[in-house]
Image (cartoon, rainbow, N blue to C red; front, side, top):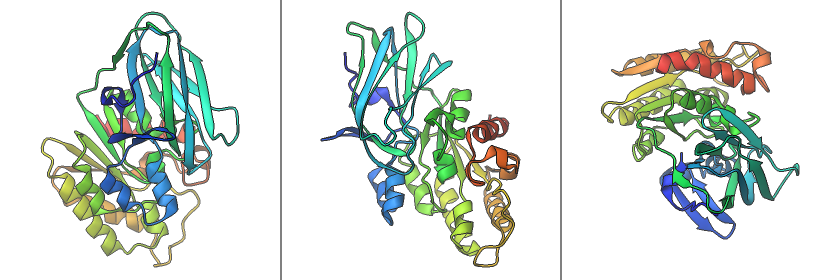
Length: 321
């Protein structure tokens, strides 16, 4: 029995679905947001990757299969995660190192009705032909949580390099407090006020903003950074009864030199913090306290590994909840 993937009740972390010749595609960005990231092919690909997109339902099925096609990728990490009853996680990935098509099968642990949540890959364009469960099985959309967390940021928030999608700090954090969530982070992104303006088209109660590393690396002047952040926060603050958190850049291990403007990463942290604190109701979270400045928590000194993401989430949650 096939799940109707064009039925939005089953789809989470997604703005819209599209039926294509390759299969159903899940756009986590609105068309306007996708347009912002067309300044380079690399940025466009990252924006089209299915980070944070989930298919969630309740069923008594004993097995499940997922088939589809991969499009462009940012990193060659093709893992899916499946979480059963918010407890047991099963990671599924194609056998081929660089798969174009895939057909993944899994046995669902337990008996009776269980919530099944499938996480699509963070770093690939993923087209789904079908998700099939046992014929005659019960099938209902999973309940949608009342609160929703929106994540804005760069590759760290998108979940680059984690071994599977449910292990990013965004996924871990939202799951821990049972929030729905939507990931609009894009690898390589810098602070842009337009993202805040367009994010108002998505429902959310909590938003976290985590930019700055690329602004530093790309030599963005502090004045421009501050103006973009002000525009971003001005837009987001228009949503009443919401919570806004700004996370300053986490450690860049062994990076102490200045950028091309003669500015340190710490100067970018201070600029972001001071600007954010000028807005009523905006809380600033010290990124240096989220992940230790220790290479064992990073893949490449910049992007946290699976353990680094776990620590990030554990340190972040007390600040949010």
